[in-house]
Amino acid sequence: MKQRRLHTLDRFLKLPGDDAPVEDNLRLLADIVGGEIIRAEGCRIMKVTDEIDLFPYSTIKDIHDHLRSDLYRRWHFVTGGDDRLYDPRQFLFLDTETTGLSGGTGMVVFLCGFGYFENDCFRVVQYFLPDYSDEPLLLQMAAEHIKADTILVSYNGKAFDWPMLSQRWTINRLDIPAPADHLDALHPARSLFRRLGEDCSLTTLEKALLAFDRGEDVPGYLIPSKYFDYLYDRQPGMIPEIIRHNRLDIISLALVTRHIPEYLSRPEKITAAALLEGVIHHFFRNRRFEALAAYTEKVTPGHFEAGSPLAKLEYSLALKSLGRVDEAGLVWKAVAGNDSGPHVFRHILELAKYQEHREKDPETALETVDVLLGLETRPRPRQELLHRRQRLIDKCRRLSPKPL
Image (cartoon, rainbow, N blue to C red; front, side):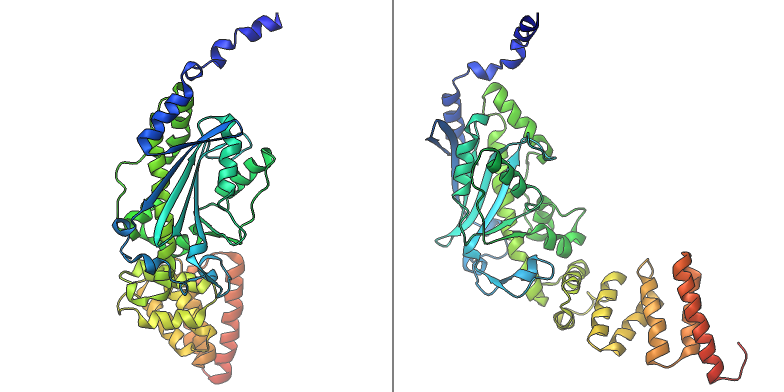
């Protein structure tokens, strides 16, 4: 009985594509996208190679300006990183497409794309998996790109792409390659550019930062299902669009990576308060206070004044750390008198400290603390403010015989 039940499942296990001429259909797909079929050890994959002209996608037109060896520093990409310089010719830009978006051992990388600079051009190489049984060859080809001196660059790749590939290498009993470093451009991009759009996806940054639109594009959430469609009927379907999507992601990743040091090293590039806020935040979180102050002073007037209270707070605290307390005090006074929002509270608190300790004016500081008490409702911070208020009252009594 059990055996008969298992036989009834055959109609679900046997798909239309199982009877299709797989090799011919893969060749059809290769002809459409300009790929080549690679065979080894009983497996086959498709490789697509393109030399990309970056000019249409970037305002930085000279390829040699992308290859400057004095540009990319570790702290640009890693919070708390040092001033170590990277040679962009060692960069290997990575992006994958998988059979799912949430992780797990059942997921497979069916398209693995790499981008790198070679002979003064930008080359993109992609490997497509025509069937699950061909996975070892795709993984071997991918691993060959990663050398001991490779600087891997990805976009959320530390959390997704690299763990996924590492898991597949392990499952297939292959050695996991060890790059010299792995830079995730998502984190500095969020720090610098998140105020430019609704999110910090590559497609958003293309429009807001790179000023190009990729046009019609297959949504990322549909990509796994479209690959399953290919496995089902062995027809090219939307695979060419997925390959294009992956290629554009790699190009965008390379250009966003280039724009990170561009904005961190050139104050004249700041054309909006939102960009300056991102730069201030990036300098501040890396505790590069002197560089933050020097950079902000070179920005076109008006952008700082139009910025948010948070950006002004980070700038003022950097000045305070540098001992430039009077300059910071001017910022606190300006924000306390003109701005609103959750971060204004911290400006007013810093102003109260400044009035008490720097200006030696406990009466004015007491008035400022009373303003803070009208804003703060949480028990513990209120208790701290009440303690500060009582200390200021005592100071005022010592300085003046008038009752309070």
